[in-house]
Image 1 (cartoon, protein in one colour):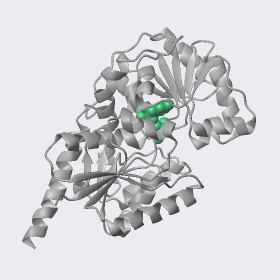
Image 2 (image 1 turned 45 degrees about the vertical axis):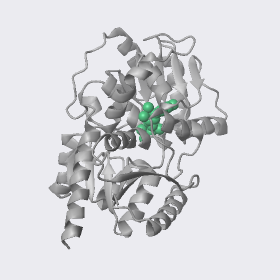
Image 3 (image 1 turned 120 degrees about the horizontal axis):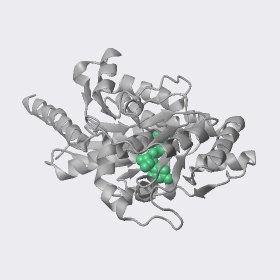
Image 4 (image 1 turned 90 degrees about the horizontal axis):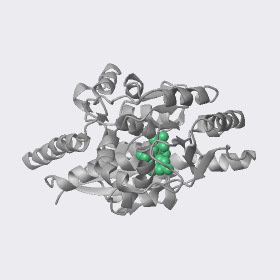
Length: 368
Ligand code: UDP
């Protein structure tokens, strides 16, 4: 019987990364049985369900249904649910992606049961010690057995932090694999009525530091209103941002077309034809950089410095946003230089590593 490999999906940003591995496994030699485990952190069909179909993933094999509550409640309940599943059905290894609470919970539960944990998208650091995702990514890296980094500089940092060289691999950017797989289909989609190629900017905002404090959120809404005087903006709004706007009694910014959260393909269809994007999303910074799309990141730091060093991404404040948008509009689009390991082959590199790990294990078991 093939050893099981459990891929843990908790929230929206996990899926494009796991999809890269899923497809590489499906298209390569059969040496393990991939099993999709959905913790339930994002369970709303708009935030999660539609993405399975868009990304060519099957429905989860195991759905834990854990959502809502504080960080501690969500993490604790997800840990208990993972432990229950893995006590009854222990996989050969567990892959967790990114930095959400469900990923941390799964890593902790698996590691304490003696199941090997692999962290996909390891080594990202923003240096913001109060950021919930930064706490999660440091904790996941600390307990994982194998660390898959998106680029060489990130892998080098993990080794400098003291991780064994054999545990760390620069496999490449899984998000880019998924973007390349779906780009043609996204480009073939019609733009929504009223939007034309290069004639609008995209917005995404959901980080706690941006939407949970009324003074910060109103500054952002004011910045968006002023920026939209230069370029019409489209904002597929994250449920967290929508709920906070409502709870503070704020009205949507003028000149900004608000939409519900989009499926992966619909979002990529809009992103790849936008003039720029203003965001606080980690994944969107990478997606924009890979597309050669100017990105304005509404944060004080990023865990993805490679997006800045390529010249595609710039950190900015709500107050500076309108000026930055105007600057981009005056600048001719720059040709994009290819980024090493952002090449659509991260899935293959992950698969090759897994094959060595799992088949090596099988051989050892046979000798014993
Ligand atoms: N995304 C999407 N629909 C949207 C907004 C974003 O499919 O309306 C996708 C986007 O393409 C990227 C991912 O969601 O792949 C990023 O997730 P998010 O911004 O929620 O999380 P982060 O990357 O900040 O952890």
